[in-house]
Image 1 (cartoon, one colour):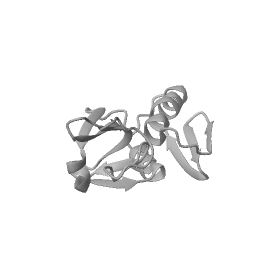
Image 2 (cartoon, rainbow, N blue to C red):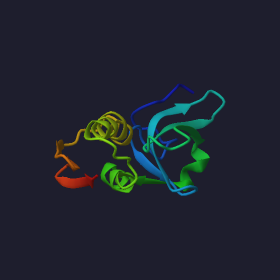
Image 3 (cartoon, rainbow, N blue to C red):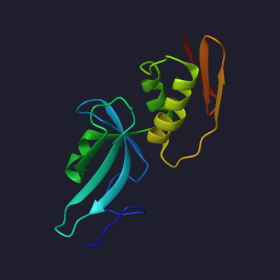
Image 4 (cartoon, helix red, strand yellow):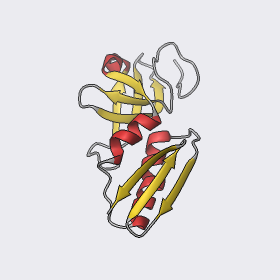
Length: 134
């Protein structure tokens, strides 16, 4: 059986770049790769959406699909937003743009705008506004 990373494959319920929530620990991951191994195993390689998650990378078999629920970038961002640290505007901007959105959205395109004031940071994500105050 060949390696299968993208496209349709009846052996996999979820696709590359799907955001999923694991019911076992209520943690969100992005599916980075799907592998069909020659021994008949089917594996998902996942990356944590939350950059502070202690387990950033995870491999699960298709036997774990019952513990996986597809979610959206917006739902994951909403869940993560309250726990993001806010020390400086620059630090938060770097974290949001370089880590969170990259981890959460993968290759999906979204409308993203940021604005800052002396005491707040605002992210507009597909028209939905998120604000953090110092």
